[in-house]
Structures are given as structure tokens and as C-alpha cells.
Image (tube, rainbow, N blue to C red; front, top):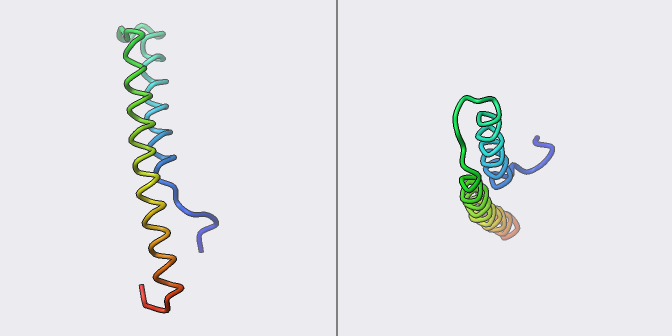
Amino acid sequence: MLRHDFQPGRLIAGTFLTLAGVLYAGDAGGLWETPWFVIVPVVNGGLCVAGVVGMAAQSARRRRRALRTDGRPD
């Protein structure tokens, strides 16, 4: 039994924010040049994708719960 529900939106948001951190860490370490404006679409795009995935997962979770309470099998 899981201790909590899997939340794919949070996983995606964390992945994109980690990517932003890696981009800036590589720039700070001198491995490559990252312009300051690159982070804006990475973070905003990641948060938008995470929001869409989170809403889809919540919708699927609600539908699955409703099917269980109706007495129909999964």
C-alpha cells in the first residue's frame, strides 16, 4: 500500500527546476555560457506542463474514485 498518491505534476516541476539549476551551475562552473533569459521559458514552460499533467492526473484520480463508489469494478 502506498503511503500517498503519486503526483506526476510535482515530479515534472521538480525536473524542470532541477534542469534550470543545472544550467546555471554549468554556467557558473565555466562549462558553457547560459544567457540569463534562457531560464524564463524553462521554468515557465515546466510549470505549465506540470500544471496540465497535475490536472489530468487529478481528473483521472477523481474518475477512478467515482467508479469505485458506484460499485463497478476497476
